[in-house]
Image 1 (cartoon, one colour):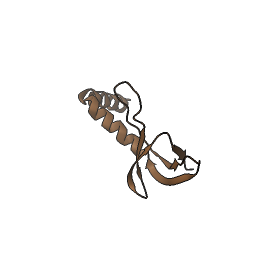
Image 2 (cartoon, one colour):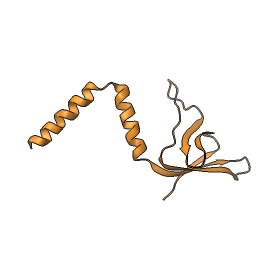
Image 3 (cartoon, helix red, strand yellow):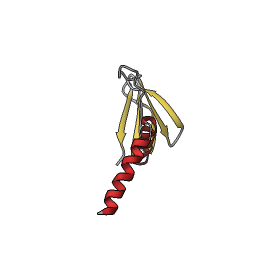
Image 4 (spheres, rainbow, N blue to C red):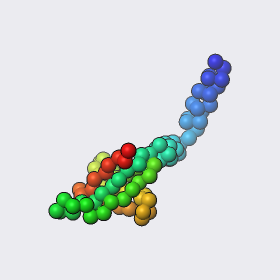
Amino acid sequence: MQKFILLNLFLLFFFLGCTEESRNKLFKQADNVLGKDLRVSYIADSGNVVRSWTVKDGKVTTHKDEHGAVSGYYYFWSVESGYIQVPIVRTIVEEIK
């Protein structure tokens, strides 16, 4: 029981001592570790897939402005090409199982 209390006290002091920015970075890193395998596809006007990328153990994100509106682009790191930025409007994100 003492170990449980000591662990909780340690975590409490750790999070109180960290800045909000540090906590956000820590949780984003944890999210990347716990990410999913995804297939991101860019679709043409005709409905055909123009290009597809694979995201392994990662995530697809978008930037939000100060009002909470999305920027219009997805950002991710693909296995095939590295860093990618594609428009949200013509993009499909699927989980690979």
